[in-house]
Length: 175
Image 1 (cartoon, one colour):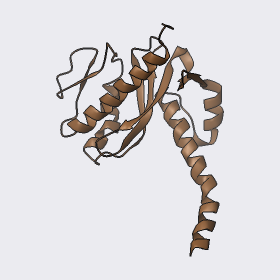
Image 2 (tube, rainbow, N blue to C red):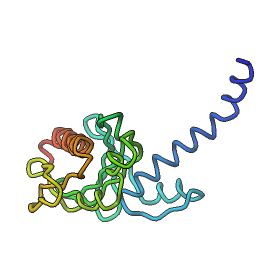
Image 3 (cartoon, helix red, strand yellow):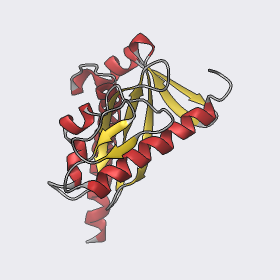
């Protein structure tokens, strides 16, 4: 039996790695709102995105001077992993794409819904994003929480704030 498992793993490993690469590249391209097909994803990524590093922080420079940063942190039930695209000011969020999350289906997983992610667009870290009750956001730093998913919403906003602190530390003195 173990010989069969090793053979299956050896056979499928390249496909698994290729699928993981497609998922990673697609999350970055989605954050920049760049259209692609799986067949041309590497070509489209390479012609539109520059991978950079500063003080141990990997980031991506895309069209129009926008910059995207990967994020990874604990949600309520597991990791939330994605990419946050920022305007050139490094304060204003231009888009957010989630690659992976383990929140409760139908509740916490609603952080991946476009309506919630769209509510984060054009918000600013001034100095941090604030989560407020659903329907109560009225400033450029406030994000409406998701009713029934307060803890997942709170964890997600905390991850974004922590990532922005890392960004500020990496670019301290550059801006």
